Length: 152
Image 1 (tube, rainbow, N blue to C red):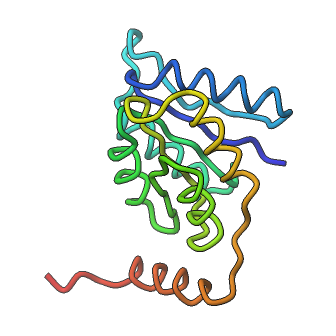
Image 2: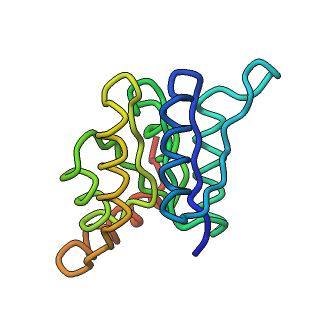
């Protein structure tokens, strides 16, 4: 199993540390892309982009990104062609992100959800796999639009 990529900004360090410990308790390897901001580390767009690029390069199969709301991380990760990141604040969304949308990344908001819910969401997402079926043509269409040229 490839390690799970994880990254957080300064608003979500504590929740990220809890998720890393949770994954390690489950014997799931983790690579942390969070930088030390006090040492001049990156801001959330840099962290999200690095994680998404590492997944695109197949260094990881999945990633978890955390910030205050999960919104900014999701926006940035989705800028990388081939990456599908979903903001998840409940288990149903986490399951559907994976089963219906083949999302390789979930984003969580440390100011939106608590620690126990975050662990439950991560577990639901990790235990879910892309189902294909009727969702496969929709995911393929996402890829089509990623390749489309903007006529502007």
